[in-house]
Length: 235
Image (cartoon, rainbow, N blue to C red; front, side, top):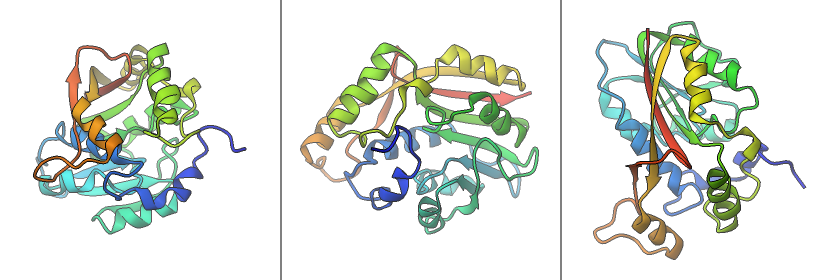
């Protein structure tokens, strides 16, 4: 039996990245929600670093914004798919990004911080590659009883995520994340987010929405107890 949070699972699930209504459906909604926080590029040759890019789900949502989209991931199977979506692929770990200091205008870290075993080192790297004045956008799972229940007990149990994909010991409280980013000159602001209930029901029942399109989307909510989103600029 493999341990929880084994990154090798993503190789086995490589066929799910772009399968409509598949295992990673919710990640598509989250990618669209992150992209909505990214402004158009303000200079020529601006760079967006997509840390833990997986199969490149962010790509279609930011393609029109004018960035060179650089995707970093440790799993080759995901990177091979991200190339077909227009990313410039870089093999590497988010705890030691193989990128130059201050190279990025925007750094996006979507659904990876609940998987890293070295949170301070990861945050330090995300901030290191970010230019002064640059923007960081992220989302992750809160380290609460309800967060653990929804994500692991119910989420994995009902098939919203593969069993063993998450290790709840790695979930991150917003206050800790805010403090970590502040150490590196980023004033992170957070808000709670959630998937639409109609979208979740369509996903569970495999019923497409009228007129086609995504099954659901991510919307803001008053609580950060399960999922939350962060956005901040580097001083």
